[in-house]
Amino acid sequence: MPDIGLPAFSQAEFAGRLGQELRRAGLDVTPERPVVFLDALRLLPPVDRTALYWAARLAFVTGREQIEPFDRVFDLLLGGGTAVGHHRPDPGPPSAVPDPTQPPAPSAAPSAPAPLAGGIPSPSGDSGRHQDSPRRSDGLRLIASTAESLAHKHFDALDPAELAALERLLAALTLRPPLRMTRRRAADPRGRRIDLRRTLRSSHRTAGDPIRLARSRPRPRPRRLVLLCDISGSMEPYTRAYLRLFPRAAADAHAEAFVFATRLTRLTPVLRRSGSGSGTDAALRRAGRTAPDWSGGTRIGHALADFNNRYGRRGLARGAVVVIFSDGWESEDPAAVAREMARLRRLAHRIVWVNPRKASPGYAPLAGGMAAALPHCDAFVSGHSLAALAEVIEAIAGP
Image (tube, rainbow, N blue to C red; front, side):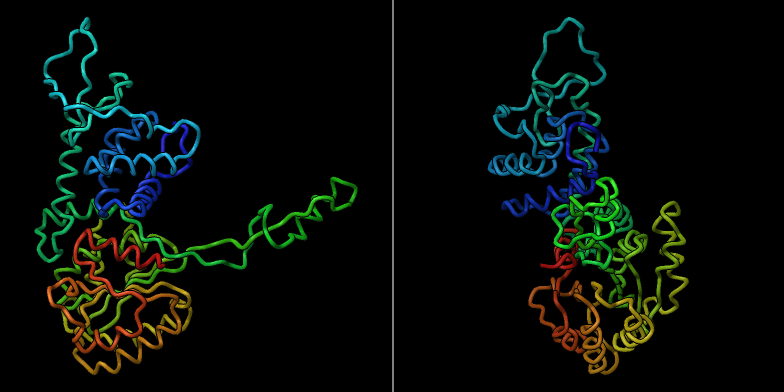
């Protein structure tokens, strides 16, 4: 974030925390809202709290009744003395956007502020350089309309152009597994354990008398995230969208990516070698050459047994959050799925099963593999659209 007296958040972290707190306050915040907010910050970097407020309100507020809870959450999240969310004049009818081809008269009196995208005027106290230009307003309006149109559209109904737009929206999503406490410790004056080494080192300044006790606390660390995606023929329409989450997840040192159909293939080395500069499509093409069973049959039990034997029990799944993207259609004995899921359940901290068929009207988990796996899952979500990925992110984070 720019240095405008705000807490030291990154843009993505601030957008995520703001969306989470607004959702807790009762606002219907879908996953595309933080994406719109991040794009607004890129188009118009805020120079003060007022500009940041209007960028956030443009992205998150969709009705007049949401303004008061939004102001309250915005002020509480930023903290500090001056609360920019209170005592704001209620904007009147938005004025017309001036013609960008006609330069303003230098001697003209200050006119009503030009509205931003969505009919929200810029703050009356801002100078001209802080107001949105019509071109930027059009850009924000286009971003918002694109995110809104893709929010609830099923992934299997996306055309190539929409899939490319979806990739840009998915770039702002962050998969945040829960934290675990490690054996490493960090200095904390309120810690429960005395740090003997630091206490003795500081006592050298007081003639060897340990006047002040140094304390420490366990250092948290994100749990490992393991993603397993079904690339069989029945999942192919959804696989195109799900795998676009994998390159960003695999770039993290605590994430692993696998695909399976008739066999299990580890994609983490391929995706990490591809890097961010080569693009997602290039990374996925290389991954497709690595997995020869793409769009083949489905042997979920065999793939899970391979994962448990080669990776899971050797430490990759111990204490990890395992996310399985599959419709649960097993071509072999479903008992193998139940057996291997039970083994995985004993290793993993949390298992999330993402099945896009769950969003179909009248769906019931009657497929053999799905029925066998469901008793061993901590969360069962659909993840069939961009909006539904909010459930996936919350399921990964845990209760």
